[in-house]
Image (cartoon, rainbow, N blue to C red; front, side, top):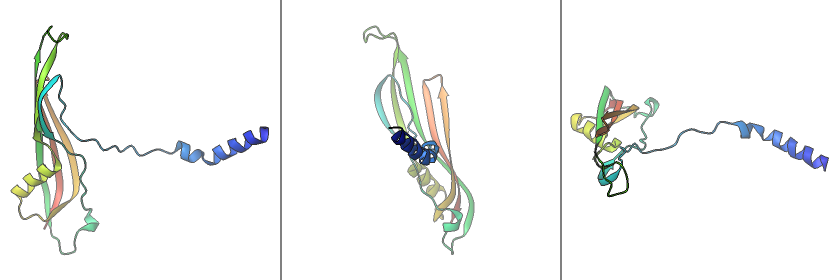
Length: 148
């Protein structure tokens, strides 16, 4: 019996690096604007992920056009109310609208810079604005290098 216990502990020791190894912390989460209370209308899109080239993957004949920037936004409004009819002390009615996706941001970029063939070295920022919890804006801001 003791030999089996020692064998199990020995096997566990051999696998110890796997037990203590860090797991990847990346989790894909769509950047959707939040809404609360009773949602009357929600037609909003947000970014999830976007694959781009690295500088070493650019076509040989490409020409660097420098830094390019674009953004796309989602908007939401929430109107608070107090009602004893619904059994709650207070709540809100809300709605959201807008396309804050990468696709929309890049579409905006191509509208500004039609000579672009592509982008690389991409950096993404999310900008949030919240005014008293009534009006919210969530924008996806893209900064990259453009090439043609």
